[in-house]
Length: 313
View 1 (spheres, rainbow, N blue to C red):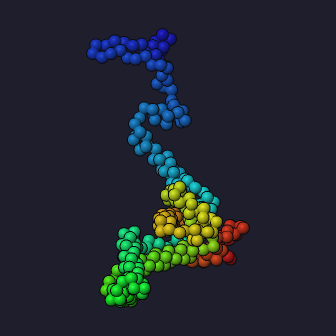
View 2 (cartoon, helix red, strand yellow):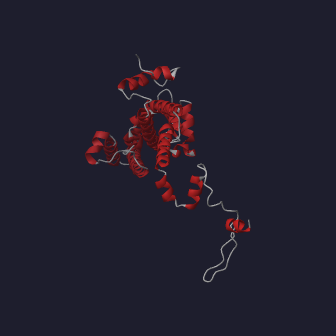
């Protein structure tokens, strides 16, 4: 018994040239004892390298790869069929609501020929000079009526007044100068404001485009900026077009629409990805009949989605 115990649990022996053998924490199994089938892969995994275990069990590796591929195909990006279809329907409805953003006219809202303040100041100075000259010539003529000034001075004043007054007529003034008058610049500003307001009224429609575009903030966080909150509130109340008075307001609306256009492009790309994913998974047939039916509903989902998607027999 002593000999068998010594074989089963060897004692550390110090031999010349190497350190003592460590004492095993647990008794090792007898050499003649065979491992159970359930324990063999575990002991092999603890003693052999990972590459050898993969080569010795090709069937288990292939099964693991197949299971992983099947799981990726079933879950896709980690979403079920219902989640993808609901998200696809919401994006399609949002695209239909915000599609008027594509009608944006950049030139109308940016107003490239808007008269600047320097031009307005120069035109006002010319207008004041014209008024002063006309007033002075008229005063000289009136002074000549009671005889305060000589008649020839009064006649000269009358002639100067007539010439200055004619210089204020638009088609005569354009003969001598091509610069617009102050009144023309004011009329141009008012005309540009009316065009921009009419274009915004066309874009907003009856539902309020800016308010609907605020729903695309997930695709462009710039739409959540506080400087656009006033526009969104006015659009929700359907009074945005007639509330814009200054050019700065129209330019702010233009910036908002440009950000909304970026969000619309990203939303459209996401919708196409979901649509293609649904076709790849076999949830949609991808034919034109399905698109025509979705456009005919105008955003209304069928009561029974499964019956709507089931092909007619």
